Image (cartoon, rainbow, N blue to C red):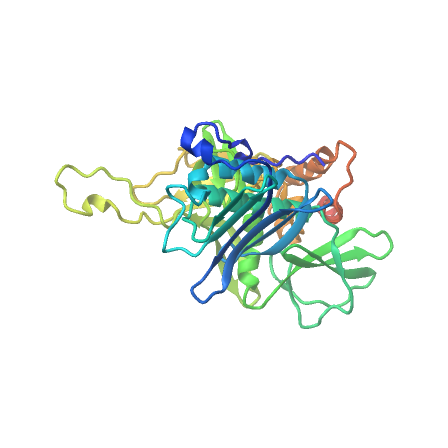
Length: 412
């Protein structure tokens, strides 16, 4: 499978640090890494581990309560341990027990690294470091990517009648469909229901399980997952949503804090193509010398910017309805413009539509896209497996459903 792990920390080493720091770098290869942080109650809210197994494989586990990253454990090659070791070497004065910045009485984070030479780093109370954040983000992305490659878990038994589902647009409640077979699957954080044509085996629909309380939030997230990524036109680049990318040459607008406007009725919630973003931006003003605090809005919130966003055959068509006070959009795209999606939101893949192997795709998500983007998704499948590798089970389901959706659109 031609998916590259774009890992910034893979390039970090002891180069550029002082001779003293280089002397602290442990000898040998890293065979065990652990970082655990607890609350005052003793409850673990962060846990990251990587260890060398006897079969030459490496086991990686990641859990972070605040990142909503829940106990994923996978196996892979030595890449995680080698990458972690590079970060440790780069930030050795944070991670070494004798380093100048290794200890802090106000933190409970426990750091341990063991090497095949016998060298061991143990810091019972680790200062929060940029290096540690690099390791955490790397392990979360590594676990997520490895998990997407695993076979789907088929959930046996009757489909619960009291379960809540959504199709990316509205709540759904299961009942048998004539001529279709329904089966439940689980992959990483998703439990989902797949309807297949009983005769042809083609995927006819995909629903994702949710709860009554999280229904709205899950639908909004699914729409943001489609929108998220890096976009570009002749003016410059911009990022939509939460993007973990090794590239740094893009602006933060619109950023991660995006909200779709909705209309409410007796039939439920209707999501519009209008978004508000930039709720926490600060007004950009240049107060004169000796101006009183807060002059002209200095330091005050600007209020959100409002765009309509709609995928067309020319890309993402955007119209700016309003912008925050004293806070223009960067780059200066103008009032009406088109953007091309050049990368998805995932660190571990440069594919614009990598969402198709990261999660089950619903009709509500596909309905946001034009024919061009849907065809680009199918072309990505071919490109991703041009080396002869087999698509994952999740990819096969998504590919079949996209083809079904396209055929329906052609019939209308």
